[in-house]
Image (cartoon, rainbow, N blue to C red; front, side):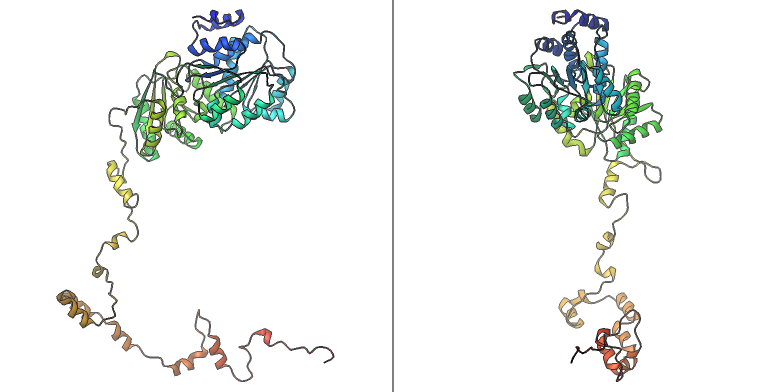
Length: 514
């Protein structure tokens, strides 16, 4: 079937033909007629199947009739990230080149003044992220009462980013009679609840099972050690040994890890860019544009680049960190093998990631094979030689990095070697008589004991201080120890009240008139 059988307008068909597309994808073939019939649509398809064009093309046909009013957009498209919103705008610019439509983009990182100016002129298509959209509505610069068609794209990503409460607020601001298009790759219970609440008798379009991966992607897992430097070294080795590597996206779980891996690859001579949520919008756009043009063959990114980014010719995807949520794995590897092309997805798996890998394999319904070959990375010791991983594991079990734990070595020595004396209440001859020959010391031990002065002899040699001498020296204060209060009272002379507290020495005043 061609696009001409789907009911699109002549202008839209001409724009599609100009881009070189002749045959619609399954999601486009099934969803476009329902959208043109003004029915609610629930679209479920794996990433990279053309979901964006499935709602952009029929929207352009619908918007040929009508006119936008100031601060009241006719259609609204919600996207979870700025990059996805900008990508949808590019689709409208490409397919709507022959139409005079006003398209506005409301995302963070851009001044409110420029966005307010576009809203004042009137907007046919408003593409926004939930946070910035609600900021404009709360300021009174945007009214959603004129929205005829609402599109919620990448709904499962909205759930992961915590945008579901914002989505519910937006749905209450738009008219109840609107048409709603809902697109997602997975169907968690929370997403199912929202579809039941905000879609009215939707037409379900499911071209693949939820959370399935494309058959054109070759998936491999490579074992790695626990240490971060071992993973980085393994990543560099995989990049150098990868076959037919044209460009690649390297995914990390945390923004801080993105910066560390980006700096490490730059240090070792790789041409690489970075992309994460804390970067300025201009830096994010520049890095993504350089990667698309091929100026940067490698891009280290967080999950902000895992959903919906349309870069058709990505040859490899590397999971430097195994995602904590199994759904994210499906979206990450969906950046490669798009539009019928082949791709490779390699995951670096540490012993701590085994539980996550089991959840991923259970979700996608298939096992991910291990890479063939020896990918064990050995760390260098202090003398420059390589140590096997088993030796390093034994060192960590003994206290980490080869340092003995305090008090561990002495605990294995016998009591006699440590010179510890046995404390017992029975006399020595009774103990010897009871234990027999085992309690008798050897000749060498007796010689050492005779040469060493006994503690009781030492106590006899010390002079004794009787109570009389202590009484004579009681007036001399001891250093660091206060003089006992009772002794001060005994030594005090008659009439000397220095040992009394000050409040007892105050004169007593008799009451007046006594």
